[in-house]
Image 1 (cartoon, one colour):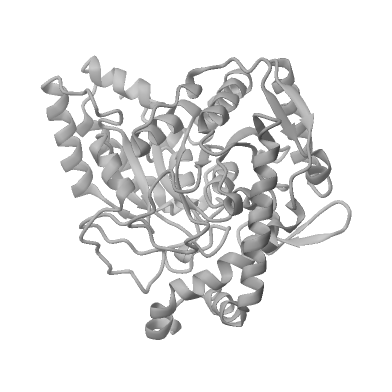
Image 2 (cartoon, rainbow, N blue to C red):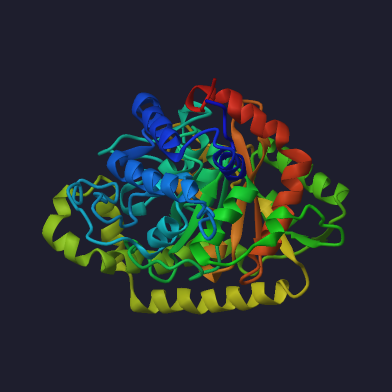
Length: 465
């Protein structure tokens, strides 16, 4: 079987009758079964569902009815806090280990209508509580680039399953960075769309005012196709490599204040590529960026305790070790503090709206540090300051969850230790096309060799001769 690295390559192979959806589904299912013991990216392998969906896709191809099914026969994974009818949805917790929804989440219905083939439910930090890939019940998700390192979280299994070649795309969720952080750690492309663009119906709630649903893929074009399927909108920016004259804001003071040297070097190199492509870099200040982590925490902490109130009453002892502290802080949260966080949120949102009146996009590194070792609790920076892994990893991402503006992460190279680093590109509300355009131009200019290297590092997980 020839390698099919993108959705377009796979669908062209289908059109030429080089391979069938059933063969592709069987291949990816076998790869998960044989190799995911290394990565632990998938909690439930959905063989019966995948073969049924692949059979239906094959019948459509035979009948020449491919129109209206942009993901026909495309293997995907779904984060395991997103409901799938007849398939257990564990939320990464032993509390829900036997929970089988009777209906799909809205986004799953969209993907199924587009012809996608679900090959597995992706592992995650329990109930999406954390930004690492720790999970005491289904195993810590390991980074496909180096299994000593975390895959990021909480959509760890979604990003790792794409990077490892167990699927071509995945759907995750993002409350403070949970799509972009694992995408950065695993060297793939992930999007937190505009708040509410993809329905969260049927997705387990963490923080109803911050939760986002979004796609993860191996490249920008595939990411856009997944978003098109989930929203029934077209995103032409993912196929445009011209960014001449695009004004890109760079919050240098905020970014450079505390950052690992290897990440800074790759970020600076990415800025040089954007300039060479004709973009105009503009120094900007992000509104209240230094308070974004505190504001996100001030909103999410009380909301998560309220969302879990029934589970807490019935099953508190069954939660993982990190939950008790989360719920204790939730109970201690004051209404005054919550309202102050909401006030600051409005101020941040208005400030970003004004900023996007002057620039088309804003870029930062996705994270100020490279992926950390599994179990690592702190990040020590060259200035001698130590920061918790949680606060470090969301420092550049959580602002856009608070304000709801779209932001994506795309790889921008490897550290000297061979670990991926991400570039975050944010845009105005419903400006996904602008973010795609900047990302696609950068990708075509700078990432083709990176993608080849990703293939080599995980080649045992890809279709081969």
